[in-house]
Image 1 (spheres, rainbow, N blue to C red):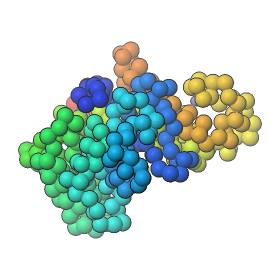
Image 2: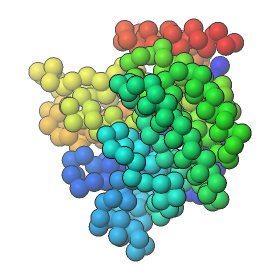
Image 3: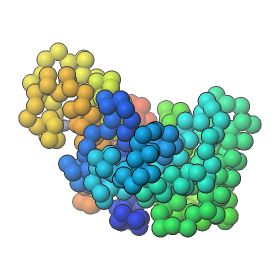
Image 4: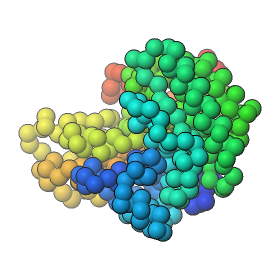
Length: 344
Ligand SMILES: [Zn+2]
C-alpha cells in the first residue's frame, strides 16, 4: 500500500498530509478569485499561490513590501499554510524572467511556508531536445535555490520528465547534490489523459524518494483518489474555479456534471453549507456559490478517502467502487493498480 499519512513542519504549523492546496487567485477580476474558505472548511487551511504573478501585480506587491500580509489580502486565516510556486507555467511562451534568487526573495516576502523552485515546464509539442534542455535548466535552478535557502520553510524541488527514468534520475541527482524537503512533479497537466504514462511517472517519483511528494495541478476530483493511492503527499487544484466558470457541478465520488443538462430539479445532491438549503435554481445562477460548493466537493472527496483509511476499509475495494462511475478513470485506476501490485 503506497497511501501514506505524514506531517511536514512549516513556519505556520504542522501540515498533516496527504492534503490539497486550493489554487488561490487574487487578481483584479473578482469573478475568478478564490472565495474565503479556511473558516468554513477547517481541514483546508492551505493555499497554493503563484509567486511570480503576485510580484508582478502592483499595487498589491507594493502593499506587501510596505508590510501588508498576503494572508489578509487573500482573506484567509493567519495560520493558513501557503505553498508558493515559482509560476513557471507562465514561461511556456516566453523566456524565463526570474531567477532562483528573486523567486526566493518573493517567497519570503509573501511569508510562504513551502517554496517551489523555479522551473520551465515541458510541452508535449516540444522537440525532445528542447524538453531535455528545460529539464536541465530546472535542475540547475533547483540546486541554486538549495544553495541560497537557509530558512525554516520547506524547499520543494520542481521535477520534470515525460518518462519514469528521467524523473527517477532527476530526483536522485537532486537528492545527492542539494538539500530539499521534498519534490514536486510538474508538466503533467498537458498529458493528464495519458493515464498510464502519468501513473508511471508518479510511481517513479514516489519510489525515488521517501520525502514529501507533491504533484502540480492534478488535484481535481477524479485524479485526487488516484494520487492518494499512489502515495502522493500533496496536490493542488484550481478545478473548483474552472468548473464553476463552465457551470459544472462537482459531485464527490463521481465527477463534474454540467448543470445546463438539467431542466428542473428542486435541490442539488449535497449537504454542504452552500447546497443544503438553497434551491437548484439559486445555485445554478450564481457562479460564486458554485465555486464554493465545488471547493467543498474537493474537500469532501479527500475526507471520504481519509475516512476509509481510518475505518480500515480496504482501500482497493473502496477505489473499485469509487471509479465505477466513469469509464476513463476506471481504466486509469486499473492501470495504477496493476503497476502498484507489480511493485509489491
Ligand atoms: Zn454542496
